[in-house]
Image (tube, rainbow, N blue to C red; front, top):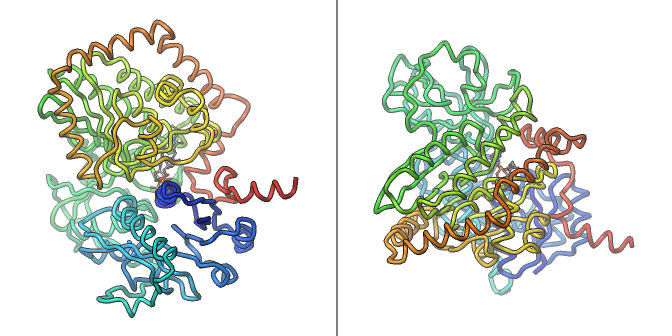
Length: 562
Ligand code: COA
């Protein structure tokens, strides 16, 4: 089918559905929901068989849904309605939730149901629930809905007619509903409130007497104090007492601060650093190392997958320690929600000189990538249970083996960030995996790739597992098997020899110098595109148009004009 995506942005769910449906043989074009007239024009140009709305913030114009079937993905169970579906589910402490595909009509989220899926919920952040469980459920529900639509026999029906309907209509959640009462709320309640607002909009509160929105909360079981009191800094987070313990608040957004975007709490409140004690930060920096059966597992779980200069340096130190261990394999495991999204654009935006900080950050990423590429003591694996983008995707390619989960989305390209050239040795690692021609098309096309596609193209070496947990457990089995391989020694020797030959043909230093020279131009040159794009990204400026590489129906228009 020809499917038009009408979506607020090309977010992770829209990207996952794009990957799924392209794999299933459908043709997709994308239009951002900017104005009714733009949506109407897109439908007229593309003439889709069906319209899919993976992520919408407004109702679809009536002229569109009356003319074409429009399937809307709602992140809630059957019968649930309203713009704060996940927020209410988390704050109420639901133990099961779902994703529903319904047909647009005059009632927002009130149309006939085509398909729905449910999943268990524990105490997760909204952003995490959306990127994992909701995305998996939506992927299955959309596949079922499209199969039913194609079959032609299924009659979608109103939610009341479905069995065991629990969902209800809920209003927009307001800050008054989210308010934390530090005197009376226990740790679980505080976590629930901050998790229900994670990603966006955060919980409005105060720290050090200044208004701010709270994100990225963790229980801090070692601490306790007068409810509401600030107890210290642990890593980048401020530890604050609840009624029965404490929470660590990792990120905040200060609406009246010098920087009005989300930052680590200790960066946003840098001038208050002295006023609280520094607590032991072991385990609070997202980096964790463990060993089993001659494999060293290095986890780096950073908020939003963004890797600042300091975080890169810390992983590098941990990686060097891992290399010094008497193990045989090192597995780079990334984080829960992302494997990595490359340099930390918010930290760069907040720096006195964003250009200098960009350079420092990319050098730190390159140092890490280079250490992985030059490792001759171990076989290395990048095990991607979660998505990776830009420099984060290329960091993975520095490992000997890249293992991916089928449901992840990779964005191995940089150009979306103001035409960045990119580094992390991609000019070495990508062509050697996929060939020069394909490397050009992957980086120029700027489209997301799924796990299976990455495997077919040679970007990945193995693709397995269903959810993140099954992927990680299978990855551990495979890593142990690799370490126990009878031919392990020969394999390590062959890898070392390949590196030696490659180095003789073109030293890694040359790749690095070339890429950094290009990046230098991006950061300091006369073309400000990168600085402009980073500003828009960090400040979340709404899209004014759909990027041309996504809306193929605009090509149709261009051809008609020619
Ligand atoms: N630095 C800082 N924050 C980043 C980031 C980065 N490199 N990459 C993602 N984020 C943040 C987003 O701002 C967003 O923040 P929020 O919590 O306030 O909503 C969050 O991570 C999730 O990103 P989002 O874009 O909503 O996720 P997605 O899964 O829909 O898209 C990407 C993933 C990777 C395609 C997209 O985030 C992206 O393009 N990131 C920038 C990558 C990049 O250019 N890195 C620099 C060059 S190496």
